[in-house]
Length: 61
Image 1 (cartoon, rainbow, N blue to C red):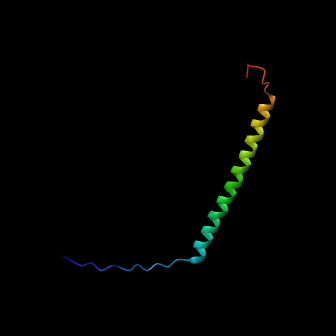
Image 2: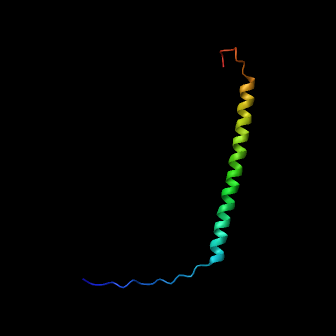
Image 3: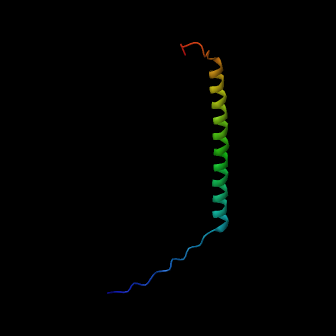
């Protein structure tokens, strides 16, 4: 049985670039979370307005 030697792969990682990517992704996630929250608030406001317009004694809605 042949023994294989593990090849070492030299890689240079630009740490600053990787940190920038993480920060960028984090900022995107924060922005997306804020937009989702705003959308939920708007949806809740619209639903509240629609529910206020309904007459609970009227079965036609």
